[in-house]
Amino acid sequence: MFEPPLTWQQLPNGDKLKDMVQQCLDPWLIGMLGDQLLKLGALSAQLDTHKAPIKRHFSGYHCGDTDIRLSPECLPIQSHCIDLTLMSFVLDFEENPHALLREVDRTTIGGGHIMILGFNPLSSLLLGQLIPSKRKQYPWCGRFFGSARLCDWLSLLGYQVVANERLLVHHMLGDYKPESKLQSFADKHFAQAGSVYMILAKKISLPMTPVKKRKGAKKAAWRPVPTAGRTSRVKNPQ
Image (tube, rainbow, N blue to C red):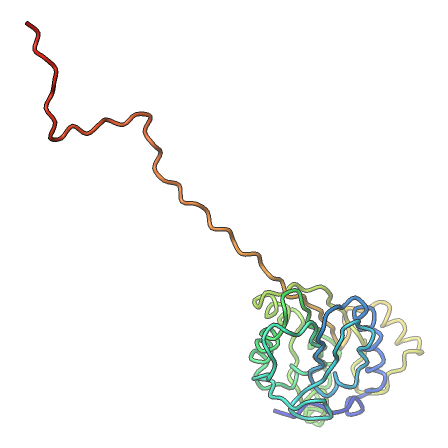
Protein backbone atom coordinates (compact mmCIF):
# COMPACT_ATOMS: atom_id res chain seq x y z
CA MET A 1 0.00 0.00 0.00
CA PHE A 2 1.37 3.42 -0.96
CA GLU A 3 1.89 6.16 1.61
CA PRO A 4 -0.66 8.98 1.33
CA PRO A 5 0.44 12.21 -0.36
CA LEU A 6 2.02 14.63 2.09
CA THR A 7 1.37 17.80 0.09
CA TRP A 8 -1.32 18.91 -2.33
CA GLN A 9 1.38 19.51 -4.93
CA GLN A 10 1.95 15.74 -5.16
CA LEU A 11 -1.49 15.42 -6.77
CA PRO A 12 -2.14 16.41 -10.40
CA ASN A 13 -3.49 19.98 -10.45
CA GLY A 14 -2.98 19.91 -6.69
CA ASP A 15 -3.12 23.66 -6.05
CA LYS A 16 -6.31 24.05 -8.08
CA LEU A 17 -7.82 21.02 -6.37
CA LYS A 18 -6.97 22.44 -2.95
CA ASP A 19 -8.70 25.73 -3.84
CA MET A 20 -11.81 23.87 -5.04
CA VAL A 21 -11.91 21.79 -1.87
CA GLN A 22 -11.54 24.89 0.28
CA GLN A 23 -14.42 26.60 -1.52
CA CYS A 24 -16.56 23.49 -1.05
CA LEU A 25 -15.85 23.20 2.67
CA ASP A 26 -16.16 26.85 3.71
CA PRO A 27 -19.99 27.12 3.60
CA TRP A 28 -20.32 23.97 5.72
CA LEU A 29 -17.60 24.93 8.20
CA ILE A 30 -19.47 28.10 9.13
CA GLY A 31 -22.29 26.03 10.62
CA MET A 32 -20.07 23.73 12.70
CA LEU A 33 -20.04 24.31 16.47
CA GLY A 34 -18.20 22.76 19.40
CA ASP A 35 -14.88 22.54 21.21
CA GLN A 36 -12.62 20.19 19.21
CA LEU A 37 -11.86 19.93 15.47
CA LEU A 38 -9.49 17.22 14.25
CA LYS A 39 -7.82 17.49 10.85
CA LEU A 40 -6.79 13.92 10.13
CA GLY A 41 -4.03 13.52 7.54
CA ALA A 42 -1.33 15.75 6.07
CA LEU A 43 -3.59 17.21 3.37
CA SER A 44 -6.29 18.03 5.92
CA ALA A 45 -3.69 19.84 8.03
CA GLN A 46 -2.99 22.20 5.10
CA LEU A 47 -6.63 23.29 4.75
CA ASP A 48 -7.98 26.38 6.49
CA THR A 49 -10.75 25.45 8.91
CA HIS A 50 -10.96 28.70 10.88
CA LYS A 51 -14.36 29.54 9.45
CA ALA A 52 -15.69 26.86 11.77
CA PRO A 53 -16.50 28.51 15.14
CA ILE A 54 -14.90 25.64 17.05
CA LYS A 55 -12.55 26.47 19.92
CA ARG A 56 -9.60 24.18 19.24
CA HIS A 57 -8.30 23.05 15.83
CA PHE A 58 -5.49 20.49 15.65
CA SER A 59 -4.09 18.03 13.10
CA GLY A 60 -2.65 14.56 13.38
CA TYR A 61 -1.45 11.56 11.38
CA HIS A 62 1.36 9.00 11.33
CA CYS A 63 3.28 10.98 8.69
CA GLY A 64 3.52 14.47 7.25
CA ASP A 65 3.57 17.90 8.88
CA THR A 66 0.87 17.65 11.56
CA ASP A 67 0.53 18.83 15.16
CA ILE A 68 0.69 15.33 16.65
CA ARG A 69 1.81 11.89 15.52
CA LEU A 70 -0.80 9.18 15.84
CA SER A 71 -1.75 5.76 14.57
CA PRO A 72 -4.97 5.89 12.52
CA GLU A 73 -6.07 2.50 13.82
CA CYS A 74 -5.68 3.51 17.48
CA LEU A 75 -6.22 7.23 17.93
CA PRO A 76 -4.75 8.51 21.24
CA ILE A 77 -7.87 10.58 21.78
CA GLN A 78 -10.54 10.32 24.45
CA SER A 79 -13.84 8.81 23.37
CA HIS A 80 -16.73 11.13 22.50
CA CYS A 81 -14.81 14.41 22.54
CA ILE A 82 -14.37 15.49 18.88
CA ASP A 83 -17.05 17.70 17.32
CA LEU A 84 -15.75 17.59 13.73
CA THR A 85 -13.19 15.36 12.00
CA LEU A 86 -11.92 16.30 8.54
CA MET A 87 -10.36 13.53 6.43
CA SER A 88 -8.89 14.60 3.09
CA PHE A 89 -8.08 11.58 0.89
CA VAL A 90 -7.10 9.52 3.92
CA LEU A 91 -9.24 6.42 3.36
CA ASP A 92 -7.96 6.09 -0.23
CA PHE A 93 -4.48 5.27 1.07
CA GLU A 94 -5.34 3.54 4.34
CA GLU A 95 -4.62 -0.18 4.78
CA ASN A 96 -7.61 -0.71 7.04
CA PRO A 97 -10.21 1.96 6.27
CA HIS A 98 -12.89 0.23 8.37
CA ALA A 99 -10.71 0.34 11.49
CA LEU A 100 -9.98 4.01 10.90
CA LEU A 101 -13.67 4.86 10.53
CA ARG A 102 -14.47 2.96 13.72
CA GLU A 103 -11.80 4.92 15.60
CA VAL A 104 -13.09 8.22 14.25
CA ASP A 105 -16.59 7.19 15.28
CA ARG A 106 -15.36 6.34 18.78
CA THR A 107 -13.90 9.81 19.26
CA THR A 108 -16.90 11.67 17.79
CA ILE A 109 -19.53 13.08 20.14
CA GLY A 110 -23.23 12.48 19.60
CA GLY A 111 -24.41 15.08 17.13
CA GLY A 112 -20.83 15.59 15.88
CA HIS A 113 -19.79 15.50 12.22
CA ILE A 114 -17.32 13.81 9.88
CA MET A 115 -16.16 15.40 6.62
CA ILE A 116 -14.63 13.00 4.11
CA LEU A 117 -12.93 13.81 0.82
CA GLY A 118 -12.27 10.95 -1.57
CA PHE A 119 -11.61 10.08 -5.19
CA ASN A 120 -14.63 8.99 -7.18
CA PRO A 121 -14.11 5.65 -9.03
CA LEU A 122 -17.22 6.31 -11.14
CA SER A 123 -15.66 9.21 -13.01
CA SER A 124 -13.18 9.98 -15.77
CA LEU A 125 -10.48 9.52 -13.13
CA LEU A 126 -10.74 5.81 -13.92
CA LEU A 127 -8.91 6.42 -17.21
CA GLY A 128 -5.63 6.84 -15.35
CA GLN A 129 -5.91 3.36 -13.84
CA LEU A 130 -6.03 1.91 -17.35
CA ILE A 131 -2.57 3.32 -18.09
CA PRO A 132 0.15 1.10 -16.55
CA SER A 133 2.61 3.98 -16.06
CA LYS A 134 0.04 5.90 -14.00
CA ARG A 135 -0.80 3.13 -11.55
CA LYS A 136 2.19 3.97 -9.36
CA GLN A 137 1.45 7.68 -9.35
CA TYR A 138 -0.93 9.78 -7.27
CA PRO A 139 -3.87 9.47 -7.06
CA TRP A 140 -4.14 6.21 -9.04
CA CYS A 141 -1.85 4.28 -6.68
CA GLY A 142 -4.56 4.45 -4.04
CA ARG A 143 -7.83 2.58 -3.61
CA PHE A 144 -10.93 4.45 -4.65
CA PHE A 145 -14.09 3.86 -2.61
CA GLY A 146 -17.37 4.92 -4.18
CA SER A 147 -19.40 7.47 -2.25
CA ALA A 148 -22.39 5.09 -2.11
CA ARG A 149 -20.25 2.44 -0.46
CA LEU A 150 -18.88 4.95 2.01
CA CYS A 151 -22.38 6.19 2.82
CA ASP A 152 -23.36 2.59 3.61
CA TRP A 153 -20.43 2.28 6.03
CA LEU A 154 -21.41 5.51 7.74
CA SER A 155 -25.03 4.43 7.97
CA LEU A 156 -24.01 1.21 9.73
CA LEU A 157 -22.07 3.29 12.26
CA GLY A 158 -25.13 5.42 12.95
CA TYR A 159 -24.53 8.48 10.79
CA GLN A 160 -26.88 10.51 8.65
CA VAL A 161 -25.41 11.89 5.41
CA VAL A 162 -26.01 15.64 5.34
CA ALA A 163 -24.19 16.42 2.07
CA ASN A 164 -22.71 14.43 -0.82
CA GLU A 165 -21.10 16.80 -3.32
CA ARG A 166 -18.85 16.42 -6.38
CA LEU A 167 -15.82 18.44 -7.45
CA LEU A 168 -13.40 18.56 -10.37
CA VAL A 169 -15.08 17.16 -13.49
CA HIS A 170 -11.71 16.20 -14.96
CA HIS A 171 -9.60 13.06 -15.55
CA MET A 172 -6.50 14.64 -13.91
CA LEU A 173 -4.26 13.33 -16.70
CA GLY A 174 -3.47 16.84 -17.92
CA ASP A 175 -3.87 20.45 -16.92
CA TYR A 176 -7.24 21.46 -15.55
CA LYS A 177 -8.34 24.61 -17.39
CA PRO A 178 -11.65 25.84 -15.93
CA GLU A 179 -11.72 28.80 -18.32
CA SER A 180 -11.88 26.62 -21.45
CA LYS A 181 -15.26 26.20 -23.17
CA LEU A 182 -15.10 22.42 -23.06
CA GLN A 183 -14.33 22.38 -19.34
CA SER A 184 -17.03 24.96 -18.61
CA PHE A 185 -19.53 22.77 -20.46
CA ALA A 186 -18.45 19.69 -18.50
CA ASP A 187 -18.61 21.54 -15.17
CA LYS A 188 -22.13 22.74 -15.95
CA HIS A 189 -23.71 19.59 -17.38
CA PHE A 190 -21.75 16.74 -15.75
CA ALA A 191 -21.27 18.06 -12.23
CA GLN A 192 -22.29 14.73 -10.65
CA ALA A 193 -19.45 12.98 -12.49
CA GLY A 194 -16.77 14.88 -10.58
CA SER A 195 -13.54 13.04 -9.82
CA VAL A 196 -13.70 14.06 -6.15
CA TYR A 197 -16.54 13.78 -3.64
CA MET A 198 -17.14 15.46 -0.31
CA ILE A 199 -19.35 13.69 2.20
CA LEU A 200 -20.57 15.38 5.37
CA ALA A 201 -22.19 13.04 7.89
CA LYS A 202 -23.74 13.67 11.30
CA LYS A 203 -23.61 11.21 14.17
CA ILE A 204 -27.13 10.49 15.32
CA SER A 205 -27.66 9.81 19.03
CA LEU A 206 -30.65 7.51 19.22
CA PRO A 207 -32.87 8.07 22.26
CA MET A 208 -33.10 5.20 24.69
CA THR A 209 -36.25 3.18 24.14
CA PRO A 210 -38.44 3.48 27.24
CA VAL A 211 -39.05 0.21 29.00
CA LYS A 212 -42.72 -0.64 28.83
CA LYS A 213 -44.42 -1.84 31.96
CA ARG A 214 -45.35 -5.46 31.73
CA LYS A 215 -49.06 -5.93 31.65
CA GLY A 216 -50.12 -8.29 34.40
CA ALA A 217 -53.16 -10.54 34.34
CA LYS A 218 -56.40 -8.67 34.61
CA LYS A 219 -57.85 -8.67 38.08
CA ALA A 220 -61.07 -10.60 38.40
CA ALA A 221 -64.19 -8.61 39.19
CA TRP A 222 -64.69 -10.84 42.24
CA ARG A 223 -62.48 -13.34 43.95
CA PRO A 224 -63.77 -16.34 45.96
CA VAL A 225 -62.69 -16.38 49.58
CA PRO A 226 -60.59 -19.44 50.33
CA THR A 227 -62.45 -21.87 52.60
CA ALA A 228 -59.87 -24.51 53.24
CA GLY A 229 -59.83 -25.57 56.91
CA ARG A 230 -63.07 -23.76 57.77
CA THR A 231 -66.36 -25.34 58.88
CA SER A 232 -69.65 -24.15 57.61
CA ARG A 233 -71.87 -22.39 60.10
CA VAL A 234 -75.04 -22.78 58.06
CA LYS A 235 -77.64 -24.59 60.14
CA ASN A 236 -79.71 -27.35 58.66
CA PRO A 237 -83.35 -26.38 58.40
CA GLN A 238 -85.62 -27.96 60.99
